[in-house]
Length: 226
Length: 270
Image 1: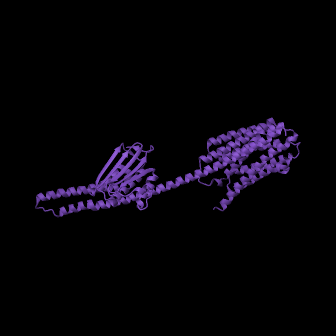
Image 2 (image 1 turned 180 degrees about the horizontal axis):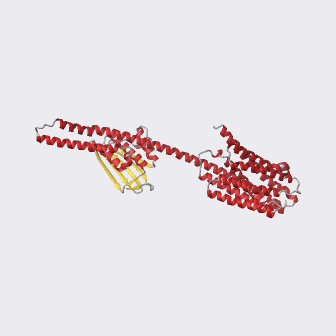
Image 3 (image 1 turned 180 degrees about the vertical axis):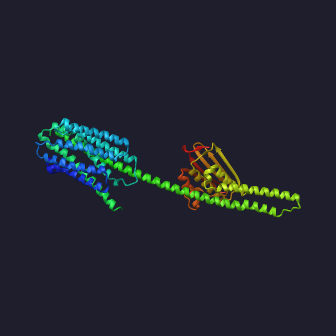
């Protein structure tokens, strides 16, 4: 099974996907200057560094890279929470997002500074994934209740949120059960764990390419409106 | 493979299932949004069409009113004033009895001309249908026809009066005006009957004549070929205000046109 995913793909797919995301946001904020897109660009660039370093550390099994994931997920709660707060316009939805993502951020602060969890914290990560899925659903709800006359595919945020929805909903079960497997699996089972993480990373790569494609398509349509 | 490692494929299948669900939801949202946008655009197009029709209706009413005024001035006011002038010209100061009669006749003719002019001035107002209301506007239209002396006119109103939406009133009035115009031009009728029914659930206007009638069988299939633009316009206008438009005709016996409008609590009682 291990042959299915070469170690390079398995370990460096994640930082590479974040690099694609940061390029997509860099292009987006060049076309349409907005604070939330600039912040997400910085966030994904931080993701490349943090998860890239985590991937280097993972080459030696004696190293623990969970603290890097905890920091990255803490940043995710802050930046993606701010992103949803910016793209949603209903006050009630904005408040809901602030409450949910603040709770996720506080949980991660607890994990980082108090719990100092040695293993990957599945439940906190699953809660963060759930918050992002809820944010996506709120975005879709607003989109359906207030249709605009413009082509919706020209809205970059739609591409971003669609990517998030696929990744965070599709990866929810993997994240939720990851702790269970790390607790139950022996050293011989790590190939199966690798399989799970690889699926998550492949999904991340797909959604990052989708987001970048969306940005390139929007830029192309703006340049050559048919 | 032990039981723990068997759980991994289950998680992978569950995750794939969630990915498919996510893709499905996104697809449905995009399709729904597209349909919604299509619906909004169609609604906007309908609004533009309605506004255009309303504008055309107003123009036609104005045109018809000017024709009526011209005819009224020529046939009644002009005739009356000419007669008064003739009376004044032929007055003989020596004939005191005849003089009194001519003065009194001239006074009567001039008074009538003033009254007719006052009535006409009301119809010069472009919003006179909205100002007078549908019943009064139709009544005025019938009065004009009756004055010609060629028709026996009957006008009935049943039920508790209420006002319709002013735009709808305008369109219904124009349909009635067009029907009356068609009767005068083509029906060879001697009697015209208009009935307006203010039912709480349905508003109905029925215009009947005892003219020569025509074969209306093909109108059931909305085929207006050979009938000119008038009938098609009336039908289209009734449709844009969601009103029913029905024509029944018997050759040699006359024609009846019924316009009915369902009431959806948008009326105001008078």
